[in-house]
Length: 198
Image 1 (cartoon, one colour):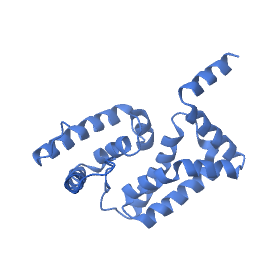
Image 2 (cartoon, rainbow, N blue to C red; image 1 turned 120 degrees about the horizontal axis):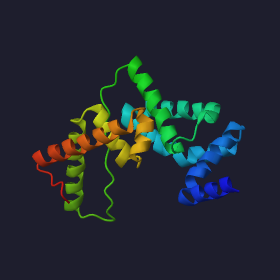
Image 3 (cartoon, helix red, strand yellow; image 1 turned 45 degrees about the vertical axis):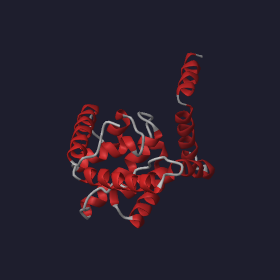
Image 4 (tube, rainbow, N blue to C red; image 1 turned 120 degrees about the vertical axis):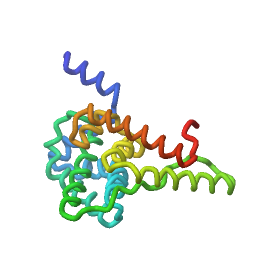
C-alpha cells in the first residue's frame, strides 16, 4: 500500500517518466509497439543530438539506429537512476565518443537556435540570422566539454543531474562546467557586441 502511494505520487509529479519506464519494461518483453512509441517520442531528439556531435547527417542517422538497436536489446539495463531521456542521450553520447576515438572529429557544431517569431519583418529576420550566426561562432570558441553542457541544457532541456548521467561525470563537475560555459559565452558575446542582457 505504501509503495503504491509512493508510485502514484511519483506518477503525479512526472507521468511521462513512469510511462517511459513502462515502455522500457514492455520493450524488455519484446513489445514492438512500445519500441515504436519510444522511437516516436525520442527519435528526433536523439538524432538532433547525434547530429550536433558528429556534424554529419548520415553518421547521425547511423548512430541513432545503433542507439535504438541497443535499446531493443538492452532495455533491461536501464536502472531507473535518471530519466529515460537522459539514459537514451547517454547511449548516443557513448556511441559518438566511441566513433571519435576511432576517427577524431573536427568539433561539435551548434546548429541554428530556434527564435520564435510568427512573421518577422525582413529587418528582424536578418537581425535574428546574424544573432544566431554570432552565437554559433561564440559556441565554437568554447571547449567541447563546455559546449556540450550548454547544448544539453538549451537544446535537450536536461537538468544538471541528467547531464551528469549523460556525460558520465559528477554533478559538481557539471555545475562547474555549466557556470564556466555560461560566463565564457556571455563574455565572448559581449566582446563581439551582442547584447546578452535581453
